[in-house]
Length: 288
Image (cartoon, rainbow, N blue to C red; front, side, top):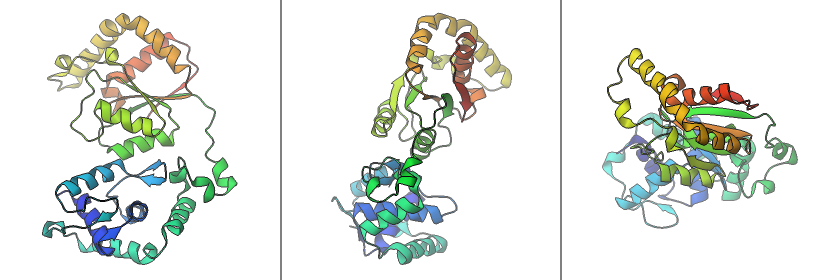
């Protein structure tokens, strides 16, 4: 069992084995703030801090009948393999002692006011936050194109990066947008982006055939691949690039994404370099 799922089960189990969804997510979030390495990352969502990965884990734990299949987060069968370290137990007990007696409403107010960023997309933020704080959510006016890879990130950490940079359009330039990593296959990523008011579009024509990416071992191998991409692939994409540039002009904050964390090891940086050299976009280019 993943350790993060053990943490989740222990949090619920310590709280009389049952939590409503509001208290569950707020307490799990507060626990993550206390941990040196958070068990879960969070994104601003419809009612504040939320984790798509935690939601996935809840469904898995229900499937294996460790949790009840109900609207509340309720222990059905606490497994012996869910034992966690003394440090983890201490952190959970600290959070429950400090925040566990707060009502759901008070807990929302506490989290919103102490971590206002996570109330950014909340439908009820006006009830809890001052106008001064609400005004800080206004988008900045600069125009930027970002490059981001999901290597080494979980889905919540990745999405949070998009939100924190006010990105409204995500351009997926993978040839085949399939991933073994939760949340990053095309349909999943598209769904999560749209839930966060980020438009997702897939551009397979800018990708590199998988056969060309095999047996890449040395810097020279990558250099040859990207030379081929720049000289042989991109010149054939003139019409697609024109359409892309027109689309870009309708958004202030756009991100281009693929797998690799290092943009220099990914074709997306060569695509963006090609576009910036051939078009006067008026955007900053930032590699995240």
